[in-house]
Length: 340
Image 1: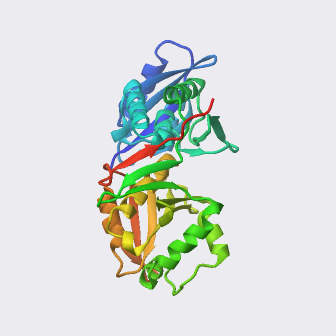
Image 2: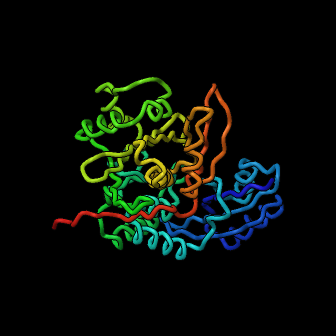
Image 3: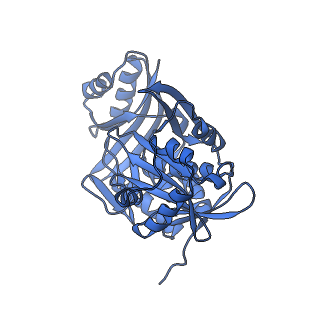
């Protein structure tokens, strides 16, 4: 099976250096799919996307470049579906963010080819752009890329929204928004209105009330985010996205009040969590369900997300791909008016 790789290389400033590298790669049975020259202080970086024949390892590609006097400063897997020329990719990302500002982080991730873009202050190994922090492990960001990302944010010129509006299947308006500590009473009320069956399907244990310390962790997960669905003054559903020990995988869970089930609320919540997961660079969402409980699989299908399932440790492990088609439940973005 062929594998596609994206490499960034430094070459000596001599005529034909790049041509010699491409010839060397061709002799290793590698097909060059794309080439980009990136200006950097003191010279340029060459980015090459190659499709390697079966058995060709990253070390073989690095050695081929070294043989021709070059240096590979970064290599990562590439998806041939994402191989679009740079201006087209940037325009598509801008259109996506303009039509749905809640996807600004995802748009910036695409423009920067970042591993992850998240809201908040940049930590070690991250760069700050507006109120977003971007990370890429396989190669450092260049000044050209950062300028391109900032230009995208300047074009949008709007803060990332904290609320997303939706309509239920029967036309009732709701708001999806991040949960905060001030929502503890509302989330406690949500649990009180849920049936024992709904709570058991979510927590896999018999419970009627939620301890106060649970409410705090539900709304302030140490490694994740919580989104609430609210109708008028009541919270009617809750969704969580939790980071796991696997960099490419996150755990997802939903709790929807009984009277709001089968009305598109869970679909919208899962779609919003999937969008956040894509922006954070996750490639898989994992949910743990009772073996007889298949509602999450149906919810993912309605959200246009592919799933696979398997039995594990007495539970049903549902793997959800964050990439998918458009949601079947209409979602609009509610952006607060900016103060100047």
